[in-house]
Image 1 (tube, rainbow, N blue to C red):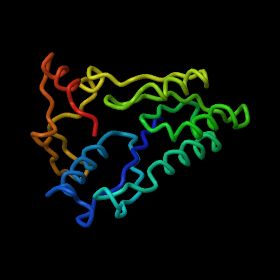
Image 2 (cartoon, rainbow, N blue to C red):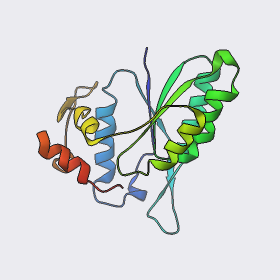
Image 3 (tube, helix red, strand yellow):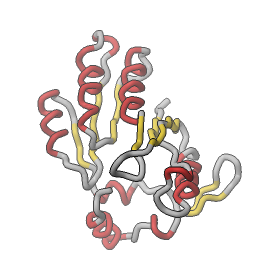
Image 4 (cartoon, one colour):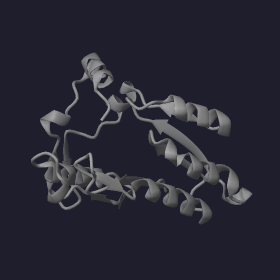
Length: 179
C-alpha cells in the first residue's frame, strides 16, 4: 500500500500570526486526513528572534522517517516534495549508504517558487530524478472545494485558497509568490 507522510507543525494560538490561522490549518489537516494512506507527522513551533515563529523538527522528522522506512524495508521508492537542500544527506544515505537490499530510490520534487538549481545539481551528482512541480501539476492535484471528513464534518475550501480554473488558473498559479 502506498503511504503519504505529511510533515507539518501545528499552529497554536500562541504562534498564530494572523487571526483564524489555527482554525484554517486544522480545517486543512482534516481535509488532508480524508486521503487514504495519509499519515500526519507533527513537529512544533517555537519563538524566533526575527520571525513570528520557527518550525522545529519537521526536517529531522522527514530524514528520520525516510531512513527508518528504508532500514525496515517498508519502501523501495520515495517521492520527497521539498525545496530544502538540507534533506540531501538523508536522500544520499537512503540511496547509497544502506545495504543493497535496503536502499531506496528517492525522487525529489521541488515546489514552484523554490530554487530548483541546488537540487538539480545534487540530483545530477547522485544520479537521481529531480522534478520541478509545475502550475499545471498543482492545478491537476487540488483537493475538492468541499470534503466530508471521516468524522462526518464538512470542510469547505476557503475563498482565499481557491484557484481559478482553466488557463486563468494556470497563469494564477504561475504568478503566486513563494512563501
